[in-house]
Image 1 (cartoon, helix red, strand yellow):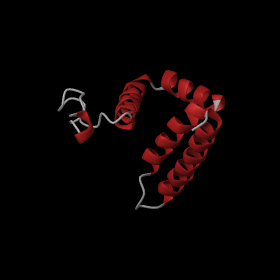
Image 2 (tube, rainbow, N blue to C red; image 1 turned 30 degrees about the vertical axis):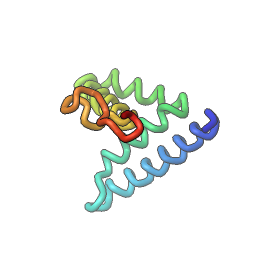
Image 3 (cartoon, one colour; image 1 turned 90 degrees about the horizontal axis):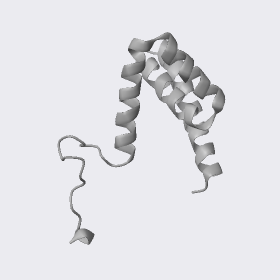
Length: 99
């Protein structure tokens, strides 16, 4: 996947999550804040304007910035396939091709 295609995919996914977040603020079924944060994280990777917004929010709310950074780190670990990071020592289980 090219860098431009990855960036477009991040932007589309980020905007979808932001729209779901706004809907979630009004609908009791969706978790609005969660979707808004996921959308912000995705858009911050693709667009400098959202990266700046994320930095401003971290400076303004330092208590929540630590929680936000922890959530980003866990999301990155999940994306890299380290879902059970501490339980398995960060190693993936062996597959047939490993033997």
